[in-house]
Image 1 (cartoon, rainbow, N blue to C red):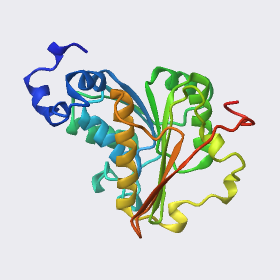
Image 2: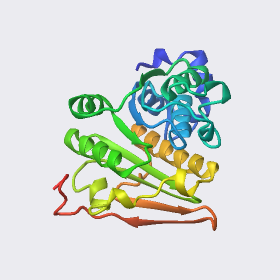
Image 3: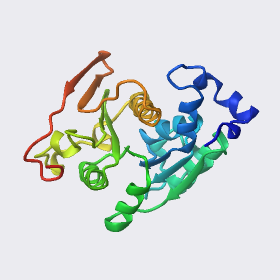
Length: 251
């Protein structure tokens, strides 16, 4: 996107980002031209989508087959009481366009599989996984490895959360390297164990930040690192992730 497309309104809207020397005009132009594919517009996806749209991401494709439920509203801030029983992607799109009509929002109200999944992943610059089950995360990861598309993934439960970035470059690990033997039958979810709504906001905001850093090519992203957060004790630490030479997906 050329400089002329940053009109007076855009300059004012994004001025606080453009002021940052790491972003500037060039970085904002990259954000305006970026295409992001977001899986899930729930607890994590809500802050991710809102911050990406607010930052000026050019095209945001949101994928979620679910409808809005009353129990969602404690943490899924894209939606409100009037949206109950409405498809989440339609509720989310309405909120996002109200926030920033300059961002093109594509709503996909279905589960993407096979060639449809690969096609959507390949047309994106970055994929964001904000889903809540291992089976879906593994499928998304496999598509990203196949198409060499950067993946930003996160999870939250109780007072805890984690974020990782897989840029799919060089010797980068993948999500399967992190959880090679995970039995999906043993996974926990917030409908059974609970989650503090603000924790999903915290994790989602970190994911959005990593996406913007990847787009603008600034700072050090969480590539080959897993950020672990215990919000109850406010303890943060990261661990290195090594590429598994025997990974069934990326090796």
